Image 1: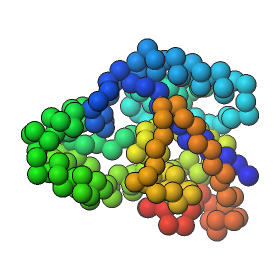
Image 2: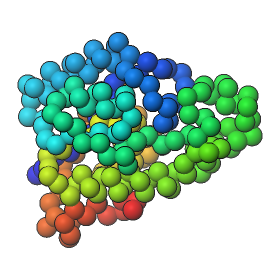
Image 3: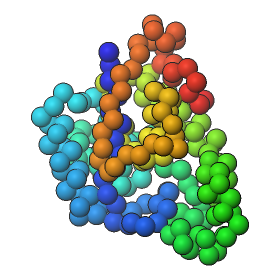
Image 4: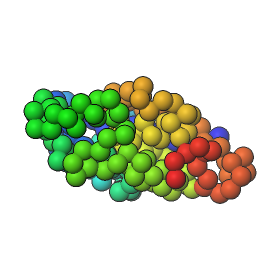
Amino acid sequence: MPTLCVIRHAQPITEGILTGQSDPLLSVHGHNQACRLRELFQTSELNGVIYSSPLKRAFQTALYIGGDPIILPGLAEVTYGDWDGISWAEIQKRWPQIARDKLVSWRGVTPPGGESWDDFARRVGAALALVIAGPLPAVIVAHEAVNAIISNGLVNKSIVDYRQDYCDIRKYEIRSSIESGEPGAPPAGFPH
């Protein structure tokens, strides 16, 4: 069966903030992590077309893997709008009620100027459908929230409980178009 490897980007230079669509480069440690990824891909059967988020931390990581990564805008991390690039403590100070509401319903509350979870899930779903349409095997280098939606769609894993370390690789077997009923169809239940 064809495979899809889904990788979270290496460590960026910023820590302790909601990164969202702020666009930091990789840290020195992140470059070292990505080098180890390159070595792994050179010595294993993990290969295929490489797709990347357009954000620098993901694209830099994808470049280490090799080839010429294809940028898919739909793989960009969710934007937190006014919250992108600031700490949770600052968010709680500046938007106390919205921050409390967000903790109660992370996917149900959209930060000021941010992207709703439903819009985000549809965007990621459309990008995944393009990847699944082929060719396979393929590699996606993106972000933890993006990869949580992908995992949920492919194997019905909880988005809330999903955790992925920097440069962690998740490998999925993709059903053929004959098994799924139509060419390039995302799995049943995947957000469209």
